[in-house]
Image (cartoon, rainbow, N blue to C red):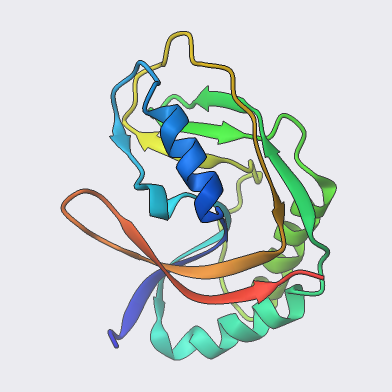
Length: 171
């Protein structure tokens, strides 16, 4: 195992829903560096490069968080940020999602991890360096979120690829 990994906690997209999103986005009239179907996720906490010796602390923080309740997530808004990040987002983030993210962040900070200080904006990245799509087909993607996961980010020629290191069920 390497000495350090680029890590983040996220909500994985179930494979059936990832296929639905992939099928829909193939019809988007825009260019960009598309995120691979198997890598679709909604980030909860980005940790950056971390020593592998700290994995036990990360697992302990997640163990303290898994008591949060499961919820329905609906991604029904397509948006692009100024840096060309094309993404799906909930028009109304579920309170349980916001509570999960906040509780996880608090647990990680208690363990001494430094997190980004910007306001949490839940989103699922579709593409980087994208252009603004015109007239996208109607959409709404929803699923029951009953777990979250720790991922490592690995560089690849086609862009980053993600590997699940562990998963935690929600109550």
